[in-house]
Image 1 (cartoon, rainbow, N blue to C red):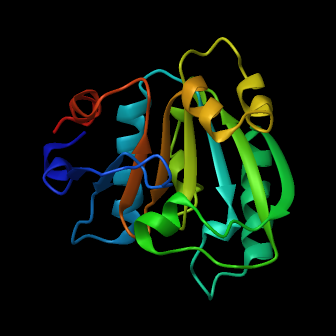
Image 2: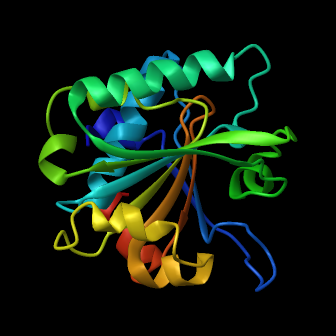
Image 3: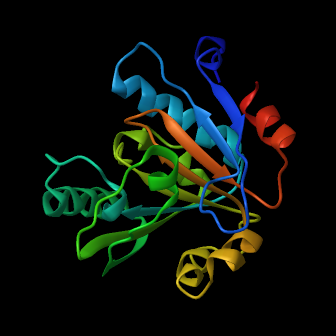
Amino acid sequence: MEKALKKHIKFKVNKVSNDTDLPQYSVSYMSKSTKTDNRKTSFELISALKGDSDVVLEVNTSLFNVPQLPEDKFVAGFLEDIRRIGFDYLYRKVPASSKSFFSQLLGLGKKNAQAHEILVYIPDESWKKGELYNIIPAYGVKYYITKDNSQGRQAMDDIYLLTDDERLDTFKLIIFDISYFAQMGITSRSLTADDIKRLIGI
């Protein structure tokens, strides 16, 4: 990551109890540049954290808090993008989340009856090609970073079968990012705070 970007990054260890959804760590990376730059910074942070691992990306529109955003139109456009690139994905409608990491971290989230949920499997080699960050939603996305790449897309298929606790054991990192506000939450049972800071170079 560029040195100029690192100076904007602030890392915080959260006080997390057993009954809270607050992530263990918070990262803010707001700069005085445009939101496009924040999105690129987000992409570079995720790239540093994931290393050579594959990624399962989750989009859930109940985490969005942008009233002017037409959800159906957004979902149609996002699905078109991932189909065009050729990513494996799963789509379904789910009950909207009333409590989430984003709502805890930023006071966000909406209370619609249903939400669109999309899981996208992104192999490491695909992540490193081109400017993938251009299609990643700025209003809220969750990343599951695999411990190894042996499962392939099965890592995505299994998410629906796992409890939240089991997901923490299965994946190296779970990252909650909203580049629109340059905020990120990180939870991991595999990496310490020092490990994470080392990966992002701060």
